[in-house]
Amino acid sequence: MRRRQLLVNAGSVALGSTIAASGLAAAESGRRLPPNDNVSSVSIHPFSTPEPQEVSTGDWITHRLGWISPTKEELEDFLGKYEVRAWIDGEPIDDFDSYRGGINEEENGWTTYWRYTIPPRSPGEYEFKIEIEFNEDLDNGKNGAGDVITTAGTYEVSPGGGRGKGR
Image (cartoon, rainbow, N blue to C red):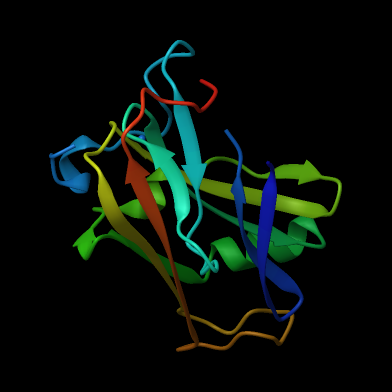
């Protein structure tokens, strides 16, 4: 099932999508995408849901965050004025911003995505947390210097061979 969670903030949106990642610390084992199309993978987002997102023990896990703005100019303005930090189960992901892709035009606006993928994990519940801090006022007047957006979601890894689709 494809799910989209939106965190609306001031004319721009931070978004996460469930689309199609144990024992090493996240900071030691991350990459932007799964190693190849033949591995099972699943994307999770940092937004609260009534139940934890589900992952099988055989799935690579892509921790995904997106930002959408109505215009390219507004997105470019945002990209020059923020710091982003991320954690998996309280362990910081070093230089999470380095996992951000390019700017793309989509149906609902201009987007950019961060993707941090880790190998399959052992069974248990894990937390993916994001913090975005604004260093300067945005030109749209909606977010100011010092504003902080924090959001977190959980996912549960259960025994299984992997059910996600490789990307």
